[in-house]
Length: 227
Image (cartoon, rainbow, N blue to C red; front, side, top):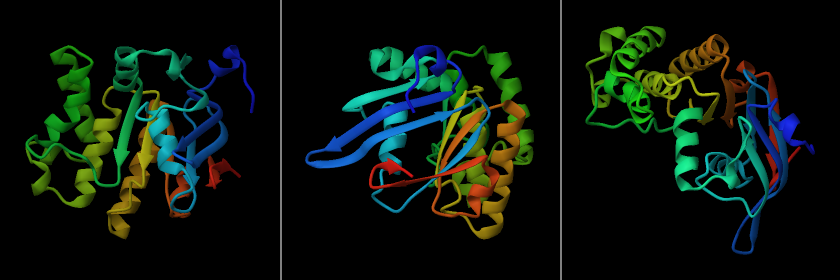
């Protein structure tokens, strides 16, 4: 997929000829991908195929050797450190397999944090957090810290945190990997519903083909190439 700048603007995320190596090991070998606003894509592949590296490059944690990644019309490599951090905070939400909640904060405070980081006014962000807690079914657990929550509840907090600032793109890395079957089903249903309700693009890395059913497209990556 070769796209012009005007075509890139149509995508929530556009990746063109992305290449990344670590030493002599070429991990990404020319990845092309476009994700439209509101689209949900499952990315599948064996360990070592480049899934996590691709997510890290999209989020700006790793820098491509060549190629471009365009997020909401902005080429990531064109941004300085402050600009990249601003784009990440405002435009991307993250859901991890291991939740990555701050243990000293309550469910309310964990969800609120991204809204604080972008300086959302206090009254507005608190109203959004209360609404999000209701959306993820945790209004009654708002004052509980992560160690008092089940795995499924922690992941629902993580989803609320990922979406509280209305990002255009959510990156989910094995979001059901640490959950039992029923909790995993609940989390997938919630991700799908909130993605649809908010029009958020979702790129979900998963080993589980049944998890991919909530997505519009399933894409496989193998040896650094999408197939």
